Structures are given as C-alpha cells and as structure tokens.
Picture 1 (cartoon, rainbow, N blue to C red):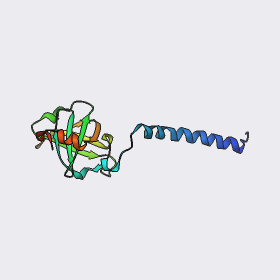
Picture 2: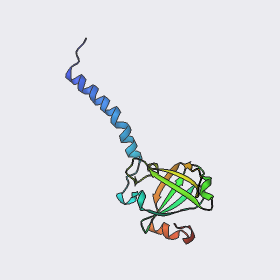
Picture 3: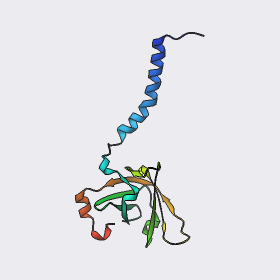
Picture 4: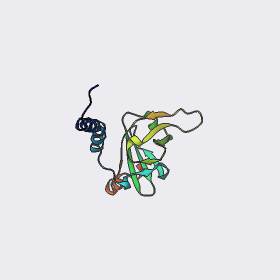
Length: 139
C-alpha cells in the first residue's frame, strides 16, 4: 500500500473541510443577518388577525407587529373564528424566521381537524408600517 506524504494528507483534509464548510457558509450568506430584536418567543404572542387566506398579523408583547405570509392559500384562515396553532421547531420556542414555526389552522370547537399551512416569510413591521394598518386589522 503506497504511503502518502504529510502534505498530501493535509491537502486532502483541507479539501474535505472545504466541501463540508462551503454549503453552510453559502446558506449563511444567503440569509440576511437577523437582529436579536427581530426574534421572539412563541409565548410572547398576544394575538393574531388573519388579513386574507395567505397572511396573518401577530402582536408580540404590547407593541410589535409581525407579518406572516404563507406559501399557499390556507382557506381555514377565512373562517369566522379561525384557530391558529403555532408550534416552534427545535423545542426552544425562539422564532426568528418563517422556517422556525409549524402553523396549523382550523375552526374552533370540538372535533376540528387543523390544516397545515407552510410559512413562507415572517417579518417585523416597522413602526410606520404598523401605524398604516387599519385598526380593525390589528391583532
């Protein structure tokens, strides 16, 4: 069996490291940095209001408004009293991106079967954007 020189072993390990690190670095570069103030815990949600079958506004704590958009129509959002079930991934409860949550929507009451909705985007509204939302649409 041929013996590799130390420099070849180091080169091979470096190439392997590049293959392992590059995808993560590329993913990190694709996501804009999230400021800590743009993250919240699921237990800080104080209310929600569907705007249509693809959009929900959340009130977090007392003054922050977040906009959650779904990838596809979630018809149950248009029910008279839709119930949102929000489950954070990872068990920590910290939500910074749409991918951090699993959302199901159904009608309130016994026997309802919630429908899963795929979250596409989540962002905190600026104070000006929140002020422009009609009061009847605020959570």
